[in-house]
Length: 128
Image (cartoon, rainbow, N blue to C red; front, side):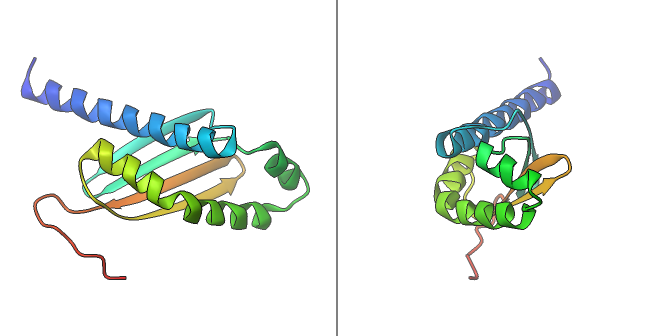
């Protein structure tokens, strides 16, 4: 195995762990998780894209054109689970998570979990 292959395998296992952790977080708190997830680590950013995963209540609201209400609820959810989500990502990446944001779109239903990591080799302080 070459160094390139080893690094690629390590990155793949980190991405898989991130995908599984975030899907698990949604399942734990919503009772239902996304149907699929993809994760990327780019420098000091982690992006996780999730497919589907609305609760039945949210699906009902979506069919009634209440996208703003779902988005507002999801932002409240983000606040409620932020520390847990940040800790999951920190544990997997081995890096401190400075901040986290979640966003959702509806056509098709996709949500995006975005984490800002501390830069490697240079600790940052939280400015807020």
